[in-house]
Length: 204
Image 1 (cartoon, rainbow, N blue to C red):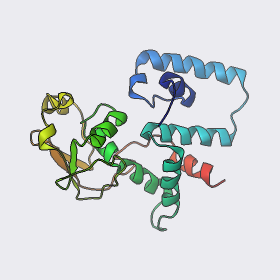
Image 2 (image 1 turned 120 degrees about the vertical axis):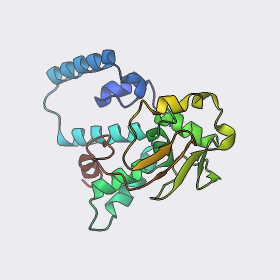
Image 3 (image 1 turned 135 degrees about the vertical axis):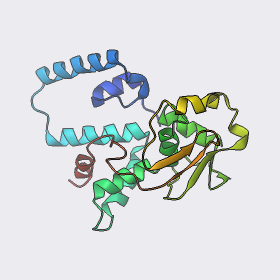
Image 4 (image 1 turned 180 degrees about the vertical axis):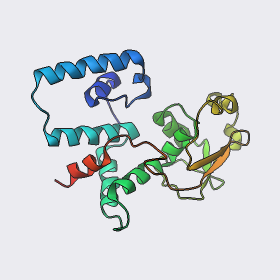
């Protein structure tokens, strides 16, 4: 997906959607830009706010508009016992590339997508090259035996201990394998934006 200059995109969306922009210097710069926009423009419309939230979530997960719309449609078709916003959050979080990132195997979601596409990850003991693969509770994720000595994974066990693990995942850093033990919620995995506003944007 072509996203253009990342710092400009992150400033426009008002959040550090890219990990490289998550610095104090960037935060201060973005805050100054936001204040200048507020002075130069009137009150932001509800439509503009919803579009901003939509773009924020879409770019965070690295999805094309078509991919994201498909997730939204599936969330809107959820059974009545499930809130569409909760379903959308679950669909996005249960992508294989996102889980690989949550496990700390890659420093960014983009790097996680590359890791999966290059065949370094297995699901249920079989290599999976599809970053968008939807995982289910009980699925086992592991680093392929031939990839455990890959440059980006050297010293992973030590780095893993420094990073908190999401409560809906398990991981054995020495064996480099783990599993999805429950469905992610907005409490166990922070949403990338206001998902209710996102759904409102698509149902206007």
